[in-house]
Image (cartoon, rainbow, N blue to C red):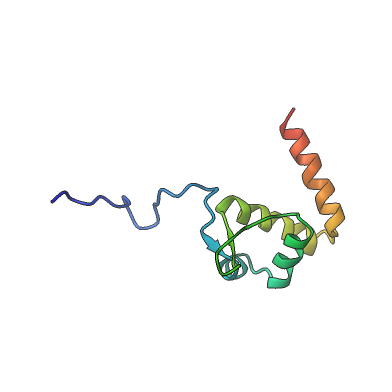
Length: 97
């Protein structure tokens, strides 16, 4: 039998940053974001997590980073959903240059 090789050390995993692996509960705990914020951002189409069969939301590492930034804008800078959409659109346009 071949030897299974795993991560080099605890904490090193080969997970694509765009793979949806984090549940909404985990994201809320890690980023200290209330669940209602995730639901509002989903309704407003600011962030669109993938859905599991049971309708639970799954977020990628990239989306979690984006959520952290959005939560900062909402909490610290008092930016509303429409303003967040504009900011994200402008930032995306700057990337495309």
